[in-house]
Image 1 (tube, rainbow, N blue to C red):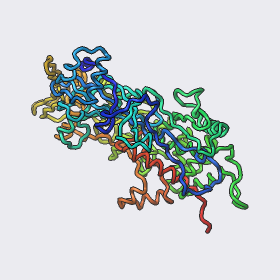
Image 2 (image 1 turned 60 degrees about the vertical axis):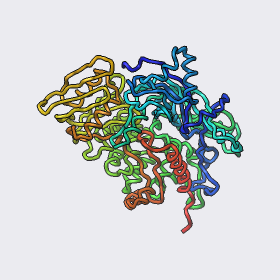
Image 3 (image 1 turned 45 degrees about the horizontal axis):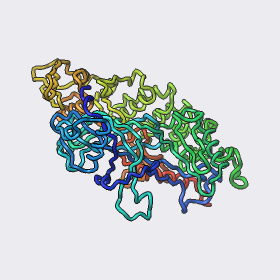
Length: 622
């Protein structure tokens, strides 16, 4: 891409408060970012749970379960007259220092160029992330910048740092809310997409900010952590916790010492990596880990007298009870593959929640017997959709591939079709049903055969991709679409072709003719050097003018909705019956996270863990 030439990027640090750099204290902190512990129990929780079996959650709390806020500054190039200098503040001072370090000449001219702009970069390192994992980036101009638009710009390589506040690190600190810069945690680079999505926006404000999906790359592993409770901080106990977790989750971990999931670092902390089957549903993984028994006591007696049964027998009975099935299925899952026979019994149950919970746990345990039931749950129960699709994405068995292929044809349900596409793509990107092509090293184009109505979908999270469903979508003449440097035109008399032109400022004009099929147009644009932002601009205009033969959707991803939210908006009666006893299926799986603030997601996670324990409380005597 021609925009890759220019001045090199600059590492820096920027937070969500515009003035933090002015008083930053560069103290060389070691890991200064704060990862609040996800609490697993509170003072008002029941003293003894329903099963009287000590679990990992009884002796630990979860750490590193929140995203790590990242910030930096970078240099945008290729703006063609819409850039400009920034104020003489700490942002600019850091850029000057870095460019000088790189021996760049005429630094003042570089920063004041109308083709360049200094920007603030923001992102977050997800919990459980591994080295080289992608990170979505937010890009914005600093206050007082003379730049007017980021459209068409390219972020040169920059660095993102973790950071924290002095006040947060020391509760007794009474000074200003200064930000403290930490370490280089990620790199950032890529073409900026401004005004993403199909909704109307303030054009001026939209042009001053943008995103780069997957433009960041983690430089470090960010494993979860288990912190031993104060009364359990013994080397023997932390070693036992790691041993029990490793016995439950076998293999499938990237970059893990001896392929272990859990590693006891000392008597206080345990590093916790994510097995492959849970990488698209991190919240579920944490719930299951905390329910792993501390002892090999799955068959030890529990209860009194005639009610005396083994822990496993009690769970196998409870999983068939709709009022207890969610937690019972999680606990059986935490016992490992030996629970498969008991979970299979629930696949024939009359209640859809029992069937679904058993099928979901069977998927994460690697049993293909769940496939058909999960496919039915996606179509018949929207409340289960996001979880069922994610479970299928975790199961590398023929039945999962078959179910996901069929679900991409579901009529009248865009979220199911897109959800199934994404699930199948992450399960096997080489599957012919979802295989795509990377155009101009900028965006993926997928053409999916579908028995259902045609649709165009583009993503603004995870990956730059356009998916064309069904009969080839076509542009409808006459039209004239402007997308950055690109103009796509056709007159009313053009029945079979259109013209794609590129008009770079100061460069040679290039034109290419192609068919009216959207695929042909996107390929022609890519051949002329178009990147994802220009493609999205074309789709937005075609959508806004009804210039396509089918509808356009953006981020039509299945989302989790708790029964509590449904009740609050007056639509929860039927779904409340699906989730009796106030049970919670959890937050939206990682695979489909979209538009949820980290803070809201963390709150939901803590609430779910608390409910798990409350749902296991001793039943009140009749």
